[in-house]
Length: 126
Image (cartoon, rainbow, N blue to C red):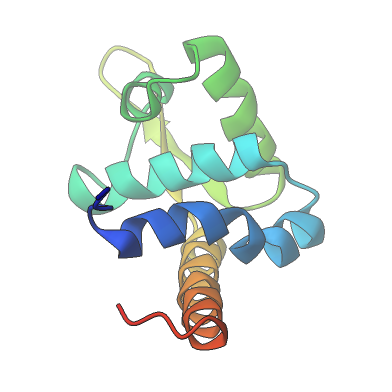
């Protein structure tokens, strides 16, 4: 018999796309932007509250520096990330704005709600 490890994580992965639809539509962002924002958030929360394009690209590991820079610039245009200065080597440093933090929390709360509704609908206990 096949055992599925940590069903909670699998459900969140499957239902994650749905949890960000409203935010993506409101800010006209795609899933790549959401991945970039989530990577910025992880770095912001667990490593340092300022980050560089390279540091965030190393968290994601699926985007080149050039692509990550483009997504960060788009997020800056939406007011979700802001430039926080420069490092000693004149590399741009960024941070997440309060609006960006609010979006991450909104998506997280929506994901919780979607998983709860899904589990209730199909009588799944987690």
